[in-house]
Image 1 (cartoon, one colour):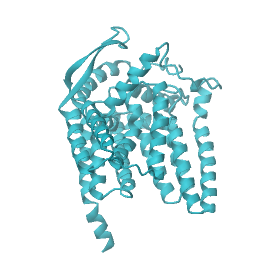
Image 2 (spheres, rainbow, N blue to C red):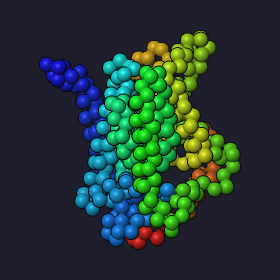
Image 3 (cartoon, rainbow, N blue to C red):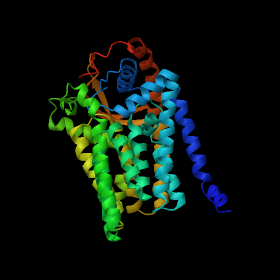
Image 4 (cartoon, helix red, strand yellow):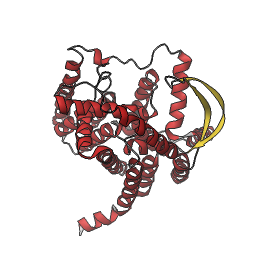
Length: 395
């Protein structure tokens, strides 16, 4: 009887997740993705499997995801590699929903999942051969295991997350501090010790998973050097930082959240109860944003923040349903209808790098529509060079 009730209570989330999964599968049918990193990941994994020699796809190396993607592409090309991303993304949303239910009503948790799951950049990551959802999945699995007081299994999952995205180590460190604080309040010395040992195990496993990168870098630490952005002015960093933070959730959702928050502050109606959950979330946001300011490359670097900033706004602002309904509507519009843009970017004809921009209001194709078109164009060109030697993979 208990099991039947549990299944019935989870029916709405199952329907939502299945619908999102079908969207991810549909977009994934149009090719590997629009990010050249997808092809570097695949070539790195394929090269390792074919020759036994590892070259990281790009610094610092993403060994676990490279091997998984390389293996899957041999078996089922982009259909299988994208399917794996879709499964990991959908499972991540389910794990996230389980965590949200500890602090939100079932309905509010469900709407939050819809907002995150329909975010166009999450859809792109969930339907592409790229490593963003790998780190999210392993990280959320690790948090779930820590919640279940299985810290040593969590360490293994967190190590896989770090191997998928090295920057996730900062978020994981803050999460460990949160759990240690909670256990300290419970005066659970035994569990605190287990958490500390779990952290040591995580560190050892993460280092071990970066040994291939160390070897590929001629037994040096040059694989840790980030070289994608050079000679950029402070204004260049700042403008990219602001623009990409806005377009993580879209222009209209950002205007709504900023405007609604400002109005609530003016009315002195902000909920300012700073519990450990809120403090941890804010700490992750602040540290992640500091890191992103240094490396303001891809909007997708900010994807983990989707799982934090939406719940934070819901926690601070009332009425929650107005916020959730409005964000759902704007997210669908941004992803599938039209994308109002405040910049008209000017690109270098040779390198396609941004060299300038005009400010205004420009109505673009929706993010997903544009991604599907670019995905088809990019994959046509990529197949011509996909199997060439990995001359650039040691950079």
